[in-house]
Every structure is written in structure tokens, then in C-alpha cells.
Image 1 (tube, rainbow, N blue to C red):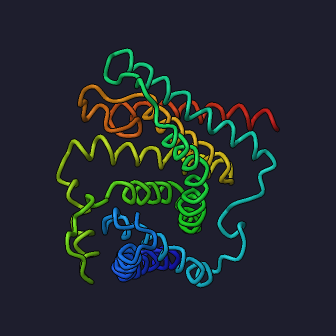
Image 2 (image 1 turned 180 degrees about the horizontal axis):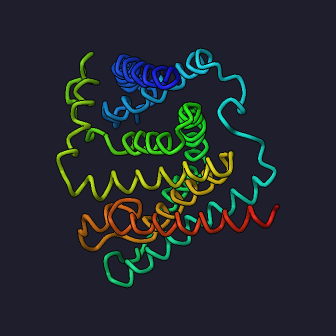
Image 3 (image 1 turned 30 degrees about the horizontal axis):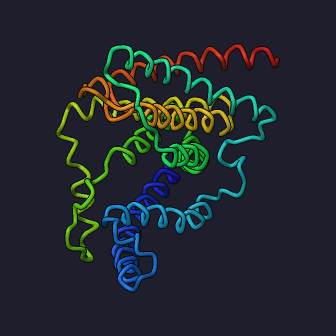
Length: 293
């Protein structure tokens, strides 16, 4: 339980430090923009800087947290060297991309989405960059550090559920842009308060939070079964690439909540796709690992 308390204190510290840093980042950016240095910064609202401040705070407090938790090596987090890292990485990408794009093809066939006539190539570049960078960062943090610390309690399934809930909450609880028209030292508190605005909407809970939670469970199970981050990194990369590429190729024709949201990772239909992905992954792990014995 000591590790759980330390982890909770870490998250509280991240929120407090991020809340203090956010106004400073915003005011600094606005000052630079006014003086003609990086003028594009003036286009970003406070919420963008608040999110970045949270990431900075998480990075700044990570080393002290690892020190007090006595984490000195990957082994302390239950991770081992994976000689099959390339196979796991590629398998993860395929296991998540194929079901996702098959679902997308069906949505196009049923005229929920339609193919675009023009394509923004710069947007595809952003998808590729996100597919490479985000999985490494988020998997190292959520499935590497957070799950690794929770697994030391000896309660595997509780640890998987807990880290998946945190993963879903981080992506779900976000305040709308331009929430704080006038930025003060308390604007971060205003952003946090508005982050819970969607909790009372059952449709959003079913279509967004539940899907994110299930995807989080899939990634956590992949990590636990392989004692490595390569399979969840591949799965995560495939999800981002598949969803991002589909959004680049198509546009939504009808509003279909709670069945399908703004992308292929939100909605009851994607929830079903996630279930299929989980089943395929478990089957692949069973036969792939058995063949190596």
C-alpha cells in the first residue's frame, strides 16, 4: 500500500505543480507573441498550456518519485529484456490496425462516413509523427511506470483496472478550449472544474470513457503477459495510425452518437472493435508464446 500512497501523492503533486505552471506558460507565450517572437503562440488558448504544464510537471516529478519508490532498474517494475521485440511491435500494429480499418470500411459502406475528395497531406504527417512518438511516451508512463508500481502490490487485476481507469480519465476529462477567457492564477482550477462537465452525460460516458478504458485494459494485459512494453507500444501505435488515417481519408456524414463518435476510437461500435482486438491478441499470444517453448 505504501507504493499506492506514493503514486497518489505523485499525481496530486503533478496536478498542483501543473496548475501553478500553466498561467506562467500562458503569460510567457503571450508576451513572446506580442513582441513578434513566435507569433503563432497567440492562437492557442489557456487549455493548451494547461495540458502542456501537466506534462512538464509529470516529467519534473518523475525522478523524485522513482527515487522514493526505490525503482532503480526496469526489473523493479516487472519489465524484462524482450528478444522478440520486433515481432511483438509489428504484431501489435497489425492486431490493432486491421480490425479498426475493417470497421471503418463498414462505416463507409453504410454511409456513416464518406471518402474525402481532397487530402491535407500535412495532417497525415502529424498522424505519422503522433503514431511514433505518443505510444512510446504514454506506454512508458502508464504501462511502464504506473502499472509497474501498482503490480508490486501483488494485485494484478486491480492494478490493470486502476491504470486503465487513470489512462481513460486523462484522455476523457478535458475542459473545452477557451474555457478561461481571462487567465488568472486560479484559471487552472476553472479548467479542472470544467473537465468534469461530461460526467453527467451518459452518452459520452458510454461512447468515450468506456472505450478508452477497454483499450487501456488491452494495453495493460499485453504488457503483463509479455513483461515488456513492445506489444502495447505496437497496439497503441496501430490505434493512433488507424484512427488518424481513417479521419484523414474520410469525413463523417451523419451524427451517430453513441454508436460512433468523432473518430474510430470513440463510440459503442469502436467498443466492439476493441473487444475483437482483445480476443485476437489473446489468441495470438497463446499460440505465439506456445510455439517458442
